[in-house]
Length: 172
Ligand code: PNS
Image (cartoon, rainbow, N blue to C red; front, side, top):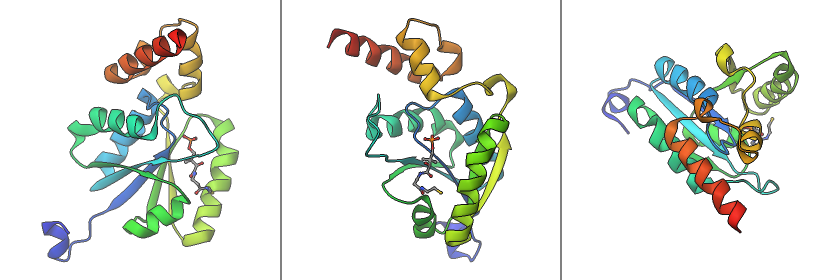
């Protein structure tokens, strides 16, 4: 418990969930904006056992910690299971999600309504910065795998890690 919580002041918490394989500038923009709105932002790397990632969950978390460290109010964790259970365990009332385009809306609305119905947790949608409206981790990985320049779409340490990982994969 922090000083302000022991004094009866409830910290305002939110979660930014995702696969983050790896974190992009688009994700980082949403996390940074959430970190300005809430006292504590939990970044939840959700484990999907049926999806083989390019980075392990630990590597993803480490990259997120490196690029969000400067905000001072971001906690990075992983979770295997329902997002609503992650929220319940930490008393988090709000999920913050970026909406890139109308095409995101349908599925995001379904998840928001399902999560609200399951536990009452609210989802707040933040419109993505237009610079990143086409950006996704999968697209970045595909372009980089074919030698395209994605350095402007990723934080520098993440870009470095991606180039290194793809080179290892090519050698293997
Ligand atoms: O980065 P992604 O892969 O688009 O993120 C999707 C994610 C991980 C946020 C979503 O699939 C999720 O919340 N998974 C956790 C399991 C869960 O709670 N499923 C029910 C959603 S209504």
